[in-house]
Image 1 (cartoon, rainbow, N blue to C red):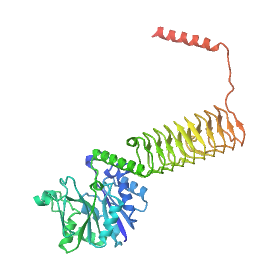
Image 2 (image 1 turned 45 degrees about the vertical axis):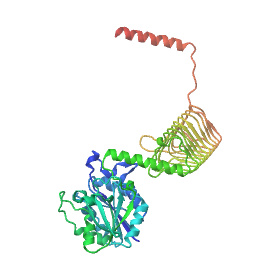
Image 3 (image 1 turned 90 degrees about the vertical axis):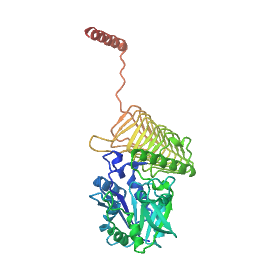
Image 4 (image 1 turned 30 degrees about the horizontal axis):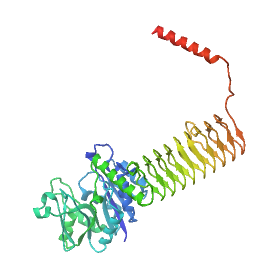
Length: 450
């Protein structure tokens, strides 16, 4: 069945107390909006329409960064969910499939749940997503009779019997797009807020003898984010679920509560992730790797058998081949590290290519930036770079070459050559003691003057 996704993302989020639109606050390294877009993407929608409002340009940028085919429309006045959904009408003018309306601040709705709604819509005019609430509170109640959704009753308007209902409204709906907009046209704003509510389409549909039903999900899927505290709770929930999935997938986490995953982290089985490791977006770790404590990875790929850290930082563009070693206080950025190569201590390797079985000595730096442009360093196979070597890019080090410790390498080094670039050592007997006496005298003079 052909689907379209309408994501309501126009709210300001006043209770977030932020200049950032609510849907752009990050959860597991990605804006809330991206989580909603990811869930909907599983439907392979023909159209994805994001309805923006507050901070529309920022929302537009985030949406198109994630999916350049998305269409972003603007709700210039926030007049309720029905009014917001109506803003997608022009973008779906030629579409005659199922429209699924979800919320940009509700990140946990599962793709399987949305698929179930689309399936249910094939046999019903309108489908609403509901959940059994542990504490129904002030949620709208779903009144169901003979498997048909009769109406949605807001708490303030509910009778005592209706308030006893625990099946509650999530706000997510699925409906034929053309029918959806016809029903919205009939929605009024005769309420205390003067807004057009999307939920009113249920009563309108039933009054027209159209069918409506409910698909249910776990209450946790419907969690909306309205405050910083709720955002923190959502982060905790995401991390707990991500850790459990990793362990089930065969990843060893000795202290799981200290490991933080991103929304798209991929880790293979038999990998060990030690305590206090943070995964930013865009990380893939193959099977059998070891990520040691206090490391930070983002936008990188780690092949099997690699050992990272402790206290290592892998930045975007880091590509580590099999059985590589990246040790403590090493930073790798936009660099390919060949099979079996080692960068073990206190080094920065950026904008570089390392061949296989190469050893990078402690304190080595690829000097890749000249103040205006970035330049690349190329290091061949079986190269030994001495400790505290400065490789001033662009520079090429041939296979089997060596550099002397403390060298500043500014020119290419041919294969199997030894390059030493440092000033000769000068020794002046007795000068150290004389210098100390001179410095002490100066210090004493300064102290007398003060």
